[in-house]
Image (cartoon, rainbow, N blue to C red; front, side, top):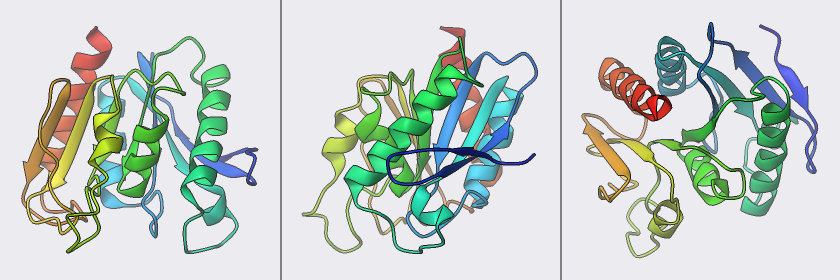
Length: 201
């Protein structure tokens, strides 16, 4: 399917749309800082969402669309993400609950903007709790600030740390590192189950 270009305050983003038959919700997923939407965990999560009757939009941030490798500042990422979610909510996901998320840096964006974007839930693949070797530089406050249901899928030996479970936040630890390619089947099953429970409510 041809990606849809969506204008943002920081240049065009691209939305790769994967519509479910008779969708019950929409899921908007962002990529990691240096990666793209073809990351294997994002692909597995997309397939799992479709099986749960949830349509998916995989989003390329404007800096990636422009061909830059290093990510834009957080405020620019958040503003561009907000414009994308607003557009999708008005168009392809009209009338549906919208769940947001992403892998690594994309998960951070989704957490920081969940309240402003009216997210019904947040899916975090490999949330980077802290920079490798620097546990004192915690970003857990971004995760703790989310007030809607959260699923975190995290590699047990992720150098970016392991977030704790909390009320409303499920954490699935699985074998592997930050790449989350150790057990894609378990990842897909967890995502499918969590989304099915979320949309049932």
